[in-house]
Length: 415
Image (cartoon, rainbow, N blue to C red):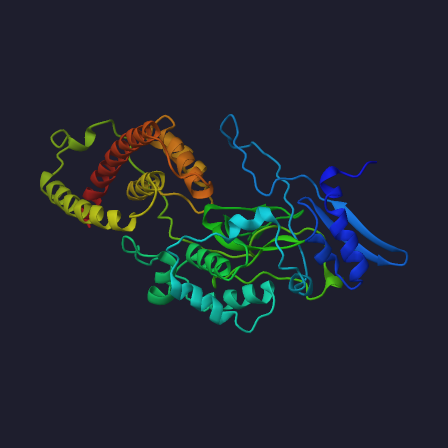
C-alpha cells in the first residue's frame, strides 16, 4: 500500500530524529506525527519505527433520535477510554498537536489569583500528570455542598468558589480544575455525564438522574483525554502504577458514587374529582374558613417562594429555569420525580398525569440540550414556545395542587 500523503510530510522530521537521538521515546515520536497517528514502538534491531493509524472516530458526538424513546426501547453505545498507567502519563510529551489549542483558551478577564494559585500548587511538579494530580488533591479538600447560594451578578464563579465560599458541588470542582490547568499551559476540558454506581451482571449498569456528574479531562499527547475527579464526594480515578499492569479500555467517567439529591416525596393518592370541584363548597358542606386561611397562606408562600426562586435560578439559561420551576411545581403537587427517573421519564409521567399533551416532554428535551449540549442559546420563536408550554403546565399543576389541598384540609381539621 502507498504511504498516506499526510504521513509523507512528517517523514523527514521522523528520520532526522531517529538518526540523531536513539533514546527518543515512542511518545516523543508521536508528537511529530499528524493527527490520527501514533508511534506504536521503537525497535533497535533491526532499527525501525512502527507507526499505527488510529481509528477515525470523532472525539465526541451526540445522537438524537427521530422519534421519542419509549419504555422497552433499547440502543447500544460504544465508547473508548484509556487505562494508561501513572508512569506512562508522567512520560507523555508536552508538545501538543494543533487541534488541542482551543483547550488552552481562557478569557481576557481570567482572575489573576486563580492563576497564581495554580502555579503555587504545581511549583514542584515536572510533568502535566503530577501537576493535574496536585490541583486535584487541593480541590478535594474543598467540601461538597449542593445548597450554596447563587453567585452575585458579574462575579467570577471559580474565583468565588476557591477563595470565598470554599464550598460547592461537582460543577464547581470540575470547572475550577479545568481553568486552573489551562492557566499553566495544560490542555483540559470539562465533561458531563453520569457516575457509574449500580452494576448489574454482564458488566451492565443502571444510570439514574441522581447519578448526573461533571469531571475534568486532561489531554496527554499520544494517549488522549484522561479523566480526573477533584470532587470529594466520590473516589479518585484508579489507575495502574506501571505500564505492565495496563489493560484494555475501561468504562468512561468517574468511579462509583451516589449523590442522592432530595427529589421530593412520593405522590400521595388524590380523590377522583372533576374539574372545578375545589371551589364547590355548598354541595358537600365544606367549611370555607379553613379554605380561605389556606389560600392566604398559599399566597404568602407563593410571594416568598417567587423571591427565593428568582435568586436561586439567577444566571441559568431560559430552558433550565423553566425546567426547574416545572419540577418544583410538580413536587408541590405530589408529582415529584422519583430517584430512578431520568428527566425524560419524569416528563412523560407528568404529561400523562396532568394531560398536557407532551408539553413537559418538550421542556425536558430543551433542558437536556442545554444541560449536556454545547449550544445553550435559543431563538425568539423557541423561547416563546417554551414559555407557552410552561404556562400551560403551571396551570394544570396548580389545579392539581388545589385539589390536593382541598382533600387534605378535612383530614387536618378532623385531627
